[in-house]
Image (cartoon, rainbow, N blue to C red):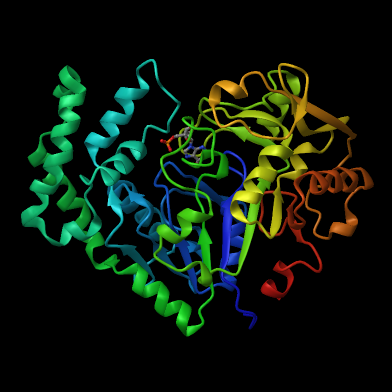
Length: 435
Ligand code: IMP
């Protein structure tokens, strides 16, 4: 392990599914602590090891590296059934997390009635295409001071009362639909049963992290979802219910901004989105379909086909500004291999024909924007390239234009799903970190 101490955040710059899992998995052997700070089991990180893939939803991606201590911060919402299943799956593959995992006593629990409410809303006219995992209602309960936290599990006698407030509100809202809800007693019983093996993992993660920082541990912060799904800075209301941008890291861990040294922003070499909402890049043609098939663009969590389009520089530049990104990790460049031409969205035409790179704040205003696409000559293959000097000249030209539009340098380029397939750019902050 190198001696350079850098605490690093890894954040998605598009609408999620950028390949953060691969980057975290690649970097985590160089860190002592790997931390999740927002989101829940709406996230899905696939890591590939020796050709085998493991899908993780709530367990930090560093799980596969025995030297990493894993932290689930207070900003996360946890489905305990799913979490236990992930622990069991990891154990069956030889990754036992005993002694190297801590779950914040302040993290909120996703309960069955949160999921019921999420699904009930998604069945109505105002659906936004959520993952149906109860994420929004769990965060609503948190903000409405009706949430149930992991620490509450240590007080089983008051649990029914704590859950009862939110449960009653959901029952009232669901009306006749509430008939299918489990009873409050059944929810409490089920929760206590599921939580039992997890109790030893619950702790004060803020103190744990502050102590680790003071002792000089290297800390890797693993973002879930991405900037355009951020509840404040994304395409509201078609967003998730947490701050997946940089601010969420600090509220979601209790650490000071001074504890962070570098920010690596992750973006695919093209753009995808699942669920409804603004997506100017979307291509309904054969190229869009090709990106979906070659890039295997189907949700890890829900299996839904992802909407696909060219790399959208204005949204990525917005995400870089919001997150203070120091370097880009460009993922899945090889998915563009073999195309005659590759497009890059450099701006949008408004209804009046004006060219802009400014993102509207209202979903309605996105509708009239048409992407302004610059086309580049395609290339044969980048698959498995490990030195950026070995990239085809056409791929270089495309990446240079991308960097110019986003105004942030590339630090890492991924050229295939396996850990070995990619290159660290020389002279960037990642190089000494991984030395
Ligand atoms: P929720 O997070 O389940 O409430 O869903 C809100 C929106 O965020 C929907 O459009 C989801 O498809 C999207 N979303 C949530 N998590 C992810 C993710 O990890 N990747 C991509 N999209 C996501």
